[in-house]
Structures are given as C-alpha cells and as structure tokens.
Length: 83
Image 1 (cartoon, rainbow, N blue to C red):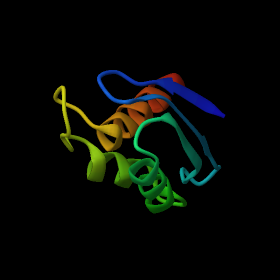
Image 2 (image 1 turned 90 degrees about the vertical axis):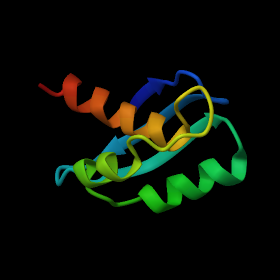
Image 3 (image 1 turned 30 degrees about the horizontal axis):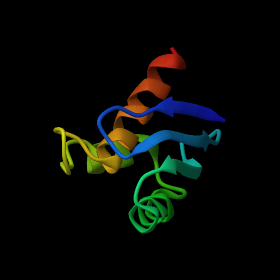
Image 4 (image 1 turned 45 degrees about the horizontal axis):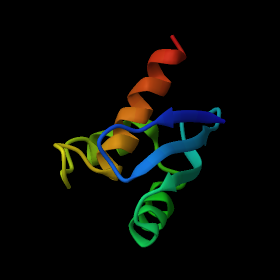
C-alpha cells in the first residue's frame, strides 16, 4: 500500500496499491468531497499508472491543484520510489 500526503486540497491523503502489471487498485482518498473522490477512485481502478497520470495531471480545482491532480502527483511519487 502506497500512501501520499496531499497538498492544497481538501483531501489529506491518498492510498493505493499497484499490481505487477503497473495497474492501480484500491484507491482511497482520506478527506475531501466524498462523491468526487469516490468517483475518481472508481474511474482509476485497474488503469495503467502512466495512462492515469497523464489523464489527471493538471486538473485544477483550487490552489492550482485538485484531488485528481494530487492522485497524478501521488503516482509520480510512487514511480520515483520504485527506482
């Protein structure tokens, strides 16, 4: 389980798992707008990390970021931690 502390959003943390085929699973946002974060988590389920990062990066809500953008940042941080 990878845990990422968010910046600039209502959600405080994001957790997720990655399988051996680079697919994301069990995305959970701690805090934030429940309907929005549940929707993002369901849409993310089973997607390739690189694809998902590209789709979500740059989505803006407030403070120059958003929960989807923070998930993209979490994915980038995860990938850095695997090197």
